[in-house]
Image (cartoon, rainbow, N blue to C red; front, side, top):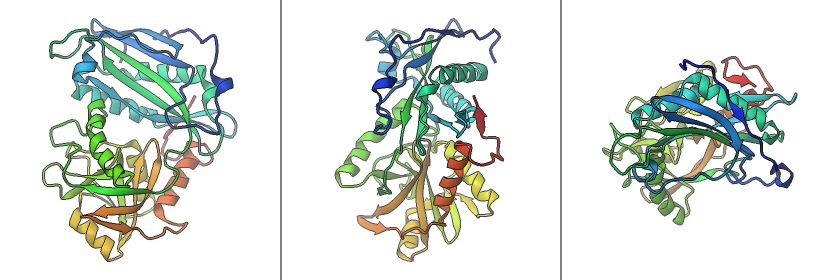
Length: 356
């Protein structure tokens, strides 16, 4: 926790971009709101808290992050209910996970009050950027990066913690086609697979690009040791409903991101009495379930898409089309329930919503 009063200086933009923004045609991550929150770390403490107009940063070519990748980030969303109130979904969980990632990369942790007060002040400043259209939201990107200008390989002594936001619509417009990846590796035990480290995503781009050239939207990653067990789907956790049981990879190996949407889905499933198995699903078991018609559903879970329905899986060179889902399918039910909670249309029995 911080040992000082958090005073945030606010400098508002002279010219808002709101009048020129087409909220009916938002491309994910391309429209950025007017302001950003910034805090600096120096001499062992966070200081200089401020909100400024969103603008480019000036970096020294020797900046440590550019060379050694000392950077972690988070992703979350804010919504508006029918009364126009701002609701944030599980921001406390994002704050804790940011610090877990930071610790792994020798980055100083961000105290809870700094994270929350910076976030809430930014949302109040840019409240008009939160869409009211159903299915739309304000994506929030907190991140920390090293700012030392030094080419020696060591943890930086200085950092910036920043938050900016962007209004977004639906991430995936239709169910996705995925390919099981058995050559390239997303994460290994003892590595940084559990962290939201920038380098994790950079390393995943080339294999994903190869799959996209073959006509697939994303990959189903397998474990780095044997490539026999399913771990994640693209940048999301992945879940399967087989014979009425919900199966998803465990986070205990340190290779799986502790997804907040993942945890929310598992919490709902257990509250509804659906059997949940946090274990690895082998390629052989997946193929058997596909061929025997036992795979009822497959979907990714994450902040951007919430639920990304999987329509086709390529395994061992063969395309398997998944069965058409009924309106009562688990993934539809859980998506509808999560949306209802996030937009304040129903009771929040789990205490997930923070009202600004």
